[in-house]
Image (cartoon, rainbow, N blue to C red; front, side):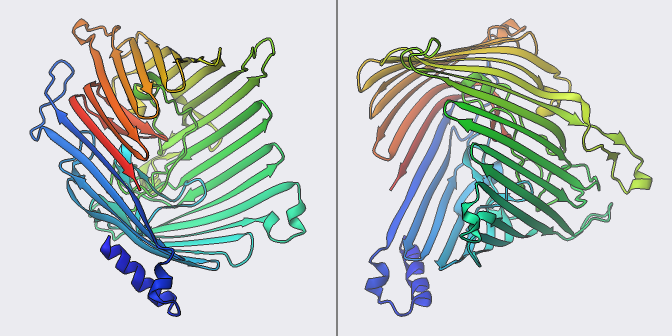
Length: 547
């Protein structure tokens, strides 16, 4: 903290030499947050939980941010001794991988050190952190933001990406411009239609050290976008093109990449309608051509599937975006039945219907000798023959009284394990799911919530059931018991209960919880990006706090 404060003093003295030290620090603030996840592991042969030699593994984080006037600086300390199972072992160790200093004056801002940034929807550039996935591709370099006039926003970045406690080999350079037409002048601000247009360009440099191929050392990508909003209607479109970028992830394919994202929405009192379509072809984009998994990814491909939050839909067969090729679309309608109407009852009723599907893109094989390893050709507007995923779901939310409310959900889905999880030979899953989430409030502080879930299928590991009871004593305490049961597994000795118990305590901005029990092996996904989670048995303690 003393070092951060010293940085603030020195920068303030440089940028604002007319201010005294007392003036500089009269509005100074230091804030931050802390997180620790530590798990004690025990071997469990029944569920395939391996022996952990260290017994206790932990992930720890501490952020410190100093601000004064137009200046801010921060640092994050991280400690993995050793990383929790399911996180990349290359995180092992401790250090300060994230630190920055930033200054803003008038319409100009410059950041030196680490930063997160995104151009448009992220099709060609997104530097971000998703701690639950062990994903952090923060930039380390310089970022500049400038507004030369009202309605015009410019960004420029240069640097390298974080790779655990090191930096990746590639150098990333990028620029983004966005113009909001209605903000350019007072006359345009009166228009009923709001229009924002933008464009981005990103390139990476990495030396060619491959003895087998002649690889491009500079690879560029460009994107253009438009957002139109008029009254209750919003339309968004973005197209991206990436030059040939052979890498380990695409089997050194020289084919250029493309992505198109289209969304539309309409809303009015009680009614919401949204739709989207997306096409992705060879858009795995990394600052190191030899990286795999989620390491050193430069871009983000937004999923067009419903992001479920309930246990079985979210944890057993979640969809992972396929950057090498997919076509998808999604639609949703949400309607609120008014209070005191026949279907709304005393408190009103909400119903939402959602459908999404993902398929392969059409690929016509080509000969390497004549196409410089482009491998295949593809018609931009044609679906392929293989289905990856589909999900039809209905959700009903109903409040029956001042004490009782419920959410009921039905899902019918298709899931291609061979493609989505890369487990060739595991086949496809067709299943139905149902969820009942009921909360009863005894008084202003005591409530109980119960979840019952079922997944019905004859494929893969068969049917599952899940039950949860959570009791809350607001504002401090909660206790929960959860059981996942694979009762339909065709192998009777694998019809296992995965039971856990959790107790937690909240006070102001701090929270501590302890969970003991079994964790099923599977994958965890956030926003279409996933990581594998091995089976485990043991005690997990989590502590979070902010100041």
